[in-house]
Length: 446
Image (tube, rainbow, N blue to C red; front, side, top):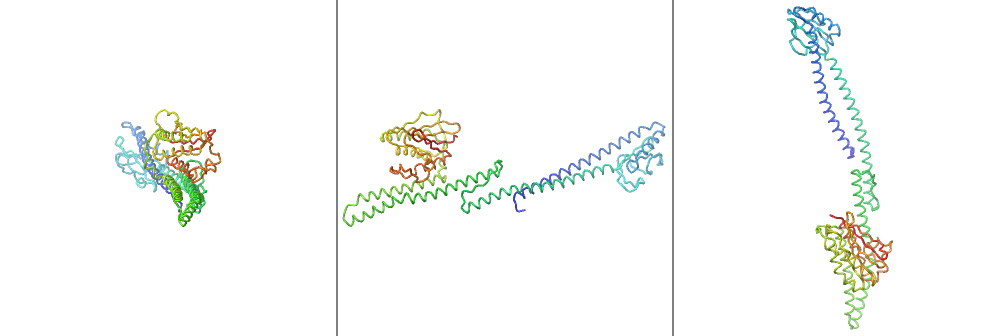
């Protein structure tokens, strides 16, 4: 009884039974009224047939007709009575009785019959004589009893089916809810890889379970990202902090020797600036992943952002003896919902990565295509590329390829790109450009 699915099934079953009872009572009332009307019609028809046998000044045919009909059925089922003008019985199967003209219901005792179902009678005058034709309610009562018995058995079967079906459905639903509960208990105990089983039938529990699994996957990724960031910070910032400490020690020694320490102070300032830049980038990624910047979303033209970045960095690429080109515009504006500043930062990071990590003579191409229901924005280069085994790893915070550790950077450029893409519901992929690397982003259209 503490199970919500069972209580819902029970409540629905009780509501169904109540509706069934109301519908049954209405149907029973209509049936009873129809049977009573049919009985009156039958009595009136019989009365008319018997009365039609009377002709002027000829009572014998009427008496014979009443006598014939009286012999067909016992008086407990059908009543016939013919009285003369003085109230004397001329024919019939019951005792003489004064009955008001028209349709009426009388007790059996009034007609001299043993106690039983009341009699529905039609009384009237035929040639100065009183004719009474009646019929017992016995047949109607028998039909009503059959209907009530059928209705009772149907109610019992429905109640049993409701309890059995409710228990079965509730137990199946409860098992699924128990699976969700066990999953959440394991997750709270630290097993972030646990997921809720999905039936695949697309019902509401499957939909909720799918969303919960997505939330758990997101939570697992964030926790893993925190662990990875903690480890990477401890590993990657250890070197600049050690260098900073060594610089300070050397400065102190020079001070003792009364020597110039300006160059060492400048090195220390650069190290501190690098460390601050790393922490600022980490903080910005965290803010973006929290979704706070979604309040600044507006309808913007993606092509304009890419064109402005290409215009700014064309000269930078030329200074590095590289070529940066922007592919021709797709037909029509490419409108999306987004944050202009963040999207500009995204393409700046991609272009700067290509310029920084590619040798002289590299060609860098920015392009935008209308691909079905998405816009496909690409930044491609003809440089050394990224090994396939490391293409997912480069999105981790502070992760750097071995060959790029000699170049400036903190390993957060592509992490920031991934965070901005996720905020804009865009999918980002790294593919082989043969040669080089192609970074493709798929933005949903509006």
